[in-house]
Image (cartoon, rainbow, N blue to C red; front, side, top):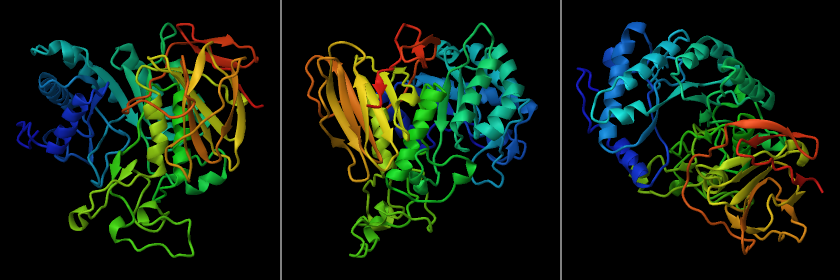
Length: 477
């Protein structure tokens, strides 16, 4: 929207390109999200530093519906609309677009948006009515969500104006806090209904290089800040955060912010080589630790910040990229997650297990220990064979490895690499025991509707409503 209220659908050519490219690539779920009310509707006439007013909500929702209608008519299958971002901050001074939305107005905005979508009369009205609403993109769980949800969430759920919870992870909470958050959602929901599904929609930029010395890494908002660590330390912390969301919160998806960054400590092609006395150092700054420069752990892929001058158009991949690839490549949209009780794993390790729609089972192990760890497994179904195994460590980006074949008793032993991530995949039929097929990247859905049941070990595990049993077949040998 222009400042005079007119619309220019050709602006943001880069964004439009990637939006259409996502559709062409078959991305399964597309969300439109809004950082701020348009400047001509804002109280301060800026796209940042303002507070949403109740009087502006009707025009704001009209604007949202008009934008969704245009792009829906252009062939974009919009699954979700998120009308606010980190609403506890107005982002003043204007370091980025943003607006604050008082907790009292969040249900008003979400309910008004639902009404506006339902009342749409355009040619693509059905698509608009089917667009789901996502909210409220709160930045922190402990200091914000746990304190604020009791105000805005119950009336929003009562009006059926929220289809999924969107939450950010910028206070990097511990396991207990996340379990309390999940319990709060259950308590605030109707006794006769399930809580809304959870989507972890944003996290990044944490200082975690020293966390590798602790099996569980760091937690708490004080780890947010400047640091550039392209090595395995932040990758392992990221992997554990993914585990937290998918298992403790039972989140449907997990997203990193942002995919491509130029916040590197220098131009890699102009970086001097490391001293010969330091053989562990990489060949340039793209792969060296730096906590002095204005650089951040905010990307899965990095590009030269001076590419226009250096003509360096290469991609520089930190270990986070390769570790993230385990989850996005091997746990595909529509997968059903199985529970692995953490008590059966060695200290300092976690695991995520899922069955994809093609019948391939995957177990992703994360070992933060400085030593190898051994686990023994039983395959969850007769006839399954190992069809691939891939590891990522400080020394290996994406290594296809062999693991022990499934024995006659349906079990196998697996060695987890020190400071590493190992994915093992199983399928019916002949197994090669090495490699990793699959393509693309996507969300990491997990089953929502759960029931509790006792399992053989006496522990408790979540089981999917279709009758899938927990994966209690992993143990310390």
